[in-house]
Amino acid sequence: MDVLVVDGYNIIGDWDELKRLKDVDLEQARNRLIEKMAEYKAFSGCRVIIVFDAYYVPGTVNKFREYKVEIIYTKEKETADERIEKLVKELKNVVNQVYVATSDYAEQRTIFGRGALRKSARELYIELIDMEREIEESVKKHKRVKKHSKIPLNDDVLEKFEKWRRGNG
Image 1 (cartoon, rainbow, N blue to C red):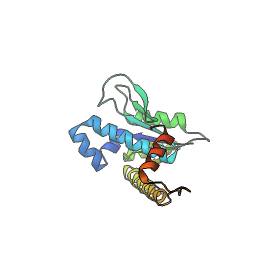
Image 2: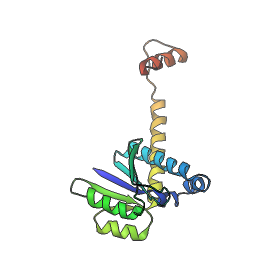
Image 3: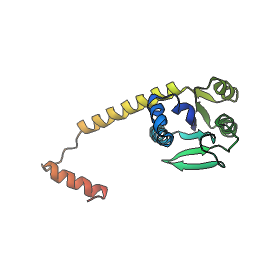
Image 4: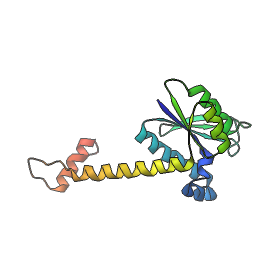
């Protein structure tokens, strides 16, 4: 199984959209990153873990799931880099391929030495853009291939049937 470990604040500090959000509200930037990584997980199928430094959120270590993405806030005197290195050591084996998303050069060298592969913030961003484009194309294609009914029905009736089918009617 592929595992993507994301250095949360490093990515927030690199992507323009998240940088702008961080300047206004750090929590919004974190939430937007979590949403983006949930989309990544849904599309790629890989396990996603986002690590945030406790430097910005003091307190004890917290770990929880949101949108099926694992989110870890480090212990108060533990850096995200230290936690990521521990995760790589725990997760890397013959079954799991671990990728670490960070643009921190020193961290990239360290995790590479432990057997993980790196993705820079830019590479991850390009991957997300490509995935969004692929999803958009798939939706457009699906809309073009509209199912034909043997009985001609107007759009209002078809919409009502679709709501019933989905349990929203």
